[in-house]
Length: 493
Image (cartoon, rainbow, N blue to C red; front, side):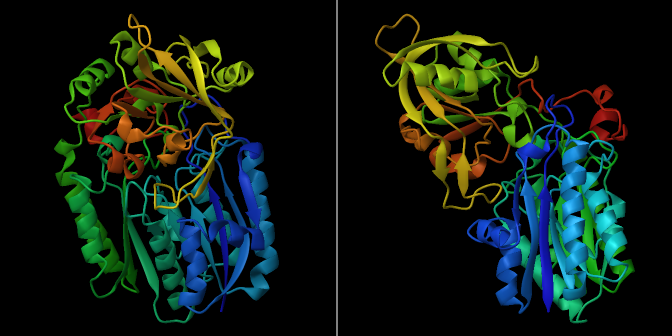
C-alpha cells in the first residue's frame, strides 16, 4: 500500500491589508518534505508516523505553508495547486490514496473557499472512488462541498493546537482501513447558526470543552469513525464562515447525519454564552499593575499575529506608557527600528518611532527612547508541544530595548522586543532566546487570542484577554462582512 502525502496551508485574514504572495510560502518537496515535518508536532508528522504504524509506503508530494496574513494571491494559489496536481497526476499509477493537510481558512483571489477548491480539483483528477482524507485546523471554515468531495475530514480537537500529530495519525489509520476495505466512510456536516467568537475557542474551558468532550465520547461509539468540531475563523469573510460539526460513520449516512445534528443542537443551546465581555486596554493594564501575583500576561486580541494581523500594534504599549507601568515585555514587528538598533550596537542609545506602520488599524507610531540591551539573529527552537506544531522558528534580526521609566531616572519601565519578521507568540522562547526571563517580569504582552496559552500559561500567574482594535478585533460589526451569512445569533439577537 502506497499513500501520497501533501499539504498547502494558510490562514487568510480578509481584513488584513497585505496579500500573501508566492514568496511568503515555504515549500518542501519529496524526501525534503519528510525531513522537514518528521521532527515537528504537525499533522503531517502524524501522516509520516502512520507509515510504520499502519504499514504503508510514503509518497511525499509537497508541503507549503505561510504565516497567516491577507488573501492569497492568484499567482500563489494557482502555482502551488498546479504543482500539487502535477505531482499527484504523475504519482497516480503508483499510489492507493492521498492524505492532504489543508488549513480550512485559506482565501485566495477568486476562491473564497480556497481549501474546498483544492479538494474539488483533486477529486476531479483522481475520480470518485479514490481515497482522499483531509485534515483541517480547528479554525477552519468548512463548506459542505468539501465534506462531500473528501473521503473524510478530520479536524484538530484542541486549542491551543497540541493534538496535531494524533489527528494526522487518525487520518492515516482511516485511509489505511478504507484502502483495505475494512471501512466505508460516509460523512455529514452541520453548521450551527452561531458565530462562536474566538474569545471562546479554548477547548479546556466552557463553552467549548463540554462540546468537544461530547465529540470525543461519540467517537468511541460503534459505527462512528471520526467526529470533529471546527470553531471557525471569523477573520475570513467567506460564505462558510463559522463553526462546523463533521461526523464520519462507517457506511451509515443516517447515523452520521443524526449525530451531527445532535451535536449541532448542543452548540446552539450554549448560544447565550457566546457574547464576549473582554477588558479594555486601560482596564487590563490597571488590573495587571495591581496584581499581587506576577507575571500577568495580557493577550492582545486585536493584533493576533496567528490570525493574520500586522504584529505592530501599539495599543497596549501606549497604555503601559500612559499608566507609567513597569516590569513589562512587549514584542513588536518593526524591521526599520531593528536596523537602527543594530546600527547603535549593544549599549547604544536609541530614539525610535515604533509600530503602527502597517495600516491605520493597529494604533499610532510611538516615540521610544532607550538603550539597546540585546541583538539576536532571531532563531529559536521549541521542543515542547505548542500551538501549530512548529519546532524551528525565525523572527529575523531582533533587538531588545531597555526603556526607562518616566520620571524615575535609572529605573526601567520595560523591555521592548523588536523583530524583523512577523512571528506569532506560539513559543515562550521568542523572548527567552533574547535573554529575558519571564518569571522575573511583571507584565508580559502576547499578540494572540488562545494560541499563546500553551506557551504562556506555564509561566503566568494570570492571563487577561484585552479587547483591542486591529485586523483581528473580536467585535467587528456585521456590516463589514460582505460574504458571510448575516443571520448569526450574536448579530441578530
